Image 1 (cartoon, rainbow, N blue to C red):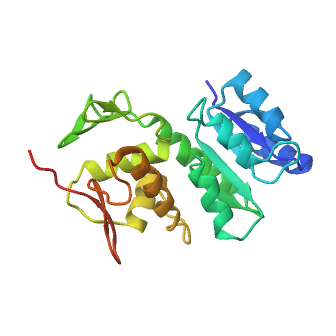
Image 2: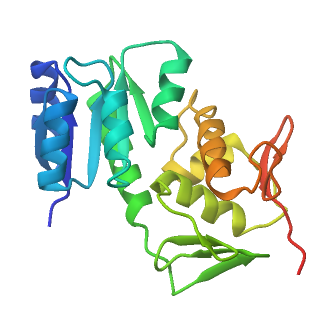
Length: 230
């Protein structure tokens, strides 16, 4: 069964181009041309992945993300023509998993779509539970618990980061290492997006995100999951 991709952009010619290419690649594609329409289509079709422009009339991509991420954890790639890093960071902080800057090649966009879908549906080799202290990651059910608290609404990217880090407590991962784990192939220039995903993950799992006790920063290198006692 083909995966359903929702493409959202107010540029109809761009939507038509992306839709035609993704259909050729074997995907089922639904479309919308602003955030309000995208909410309706997403609620009706429950897409497997969303490709979302940020700057649109009626309701932009930021407002769509603020609303829809409360309802579903659908993998999302944002499209942005802006070069300001803050625009990309805000999209990631609102729940997007990746971004592509316009103009982009369809080959790159499709590669990112496939990588993100693999990340979202990656099956464990076996029914495996990873533990480090009171933190438990269940790969079969794709759930994370800290003590008696179930961590809700982890994005596919955040879950995969959590899985990677907790599988090797004490090991230091560079941003490039983590990006490679997430996307199978590393894309130069995107390593800094890892910082945003780590910050989001800390907000969800750490008792005090400003002073993390689980995901530690190794300055000048990257990140590691702290070895836990007991």
